[in-house]
Amino acid sequence: MKKSLAILLSTVLLLAMILSGCGAKTSTAKTGDIKPTTLNFWTFQELHKGFMDDAVATWNKNHPDKPIVLKTDVYPYDEQHNKLLIALQSGTGAPDIVDIEISKFANFLKGSKPGLVELNDVVEPVKDKLIMGRMENYAKDGKYYGIDYHVGAEVMYYNKALFEQAGVNINDIVTWDDYIAAGKKIVEKTGKPMTTLETTEHWSYYPLINMQGSDLLGKNGEVILDNEINKKTLEMLKDMLYKDKIAVPAPGGFHHSEEYWAWMNKGNAASVWMPMWYMGRFVQYMPDLKGQMVIRPMPIFPGGKKSAGMGGTGTAITTQGKNIELAKQFLAEAKLSKDGSIKTWSLLGFDPIRSDAWTDPAMSADNKYTDYFGTDIFNTLKAVIGDIGSINVGAKFPNAITLLQKNICFKVLKEQSQTPEQALKEAAEELRTK
Image (cartoon, rainbow, N blue to C red; front, side):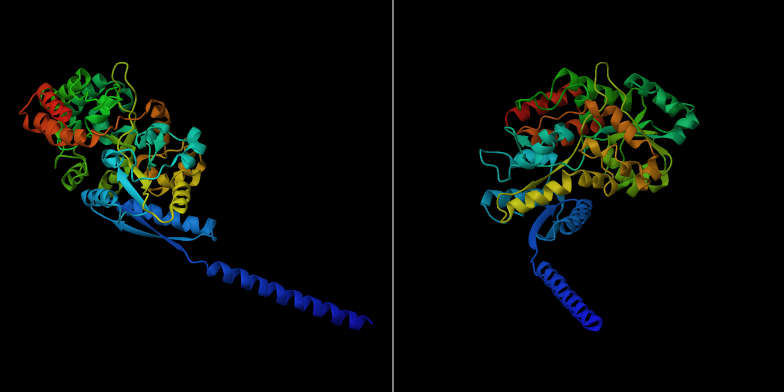
């Protein structure tokens, strides 16, 4: 009897194992049979491709029932934006997902029906956790069309070795008057300039007027380029170069030139102000300054703000895509989730747009950025983040930035062929006719 019972139980167990095995095999085969959906992504930044590739791997792990393949094309900056504009105007050829740089974004929101998909249904559920000033840069009539990678907080990068050599305490610099006075001591004691100013780009000038509540355009898109704040700020920069003599024009004309990186890498200037996303340029292109640079808040103007949100790239979804809802879900997980926001820091060295990411333990973990700048990077960000709002990116913004770069900064700070008032007035009048 016992022998018969044992045989019966063994048979049942064997059948159960066979059925279980068949079930698992069927499930695996079913998942493996799901054909991934291919989404096309255009960008002008190779680093963004790496971020999105990681996001795809995470998506496919979290959503095995709807896998995707991201086919990415990395184009030169102007070529990509021109190609996208033609595709959207002609009604064919646009990708599913695309990066659009902030100074170009207004070109894609013209008309009553932009060729980009409204993202409110994925943005609004997490609005209380986002730095919404960054989202407003990609909005029109209350509708959000792009999601940024970072806050872009403007900060000061100081070379502490040169400050120690000059006997100047970095932490004593609070105002711009303090900064100019410290610069004179730096020049006197080290023979090196306090800073460099861009003459063909806008990163030295634009954040300073924004910190004083000014802009290139008003809230309704009107031209305010030639107002008094903008004029006095440009005069201050010109004085740094030719009166106070604490600054020099950036080698190569701007802070993204290879000539500048090679020059700065030798410790040739005591400081430079740029957004936090510029950390990556230091790490990648100025390796010899590792351990010498520290990040601190910007000097302030009387009654002004401690920082400004500068630069940015809005990732958007075009209306030509065949899988719009899937693209939107993927983009939301990649850039609006807490984990995705943390990866903008760990993979790209950007200051995340979700505030709840800043206190996550992952943000204080050692990485190549803390090795380079120290561990107090996010203390600086927390100290200034409350002052960061949006900028006015109306329809004339792309032309305003071009005039600022190619005419105003170059003619005043490099050529000295016009006074600040003349250059701003001439550019403003031209902009008003467009």
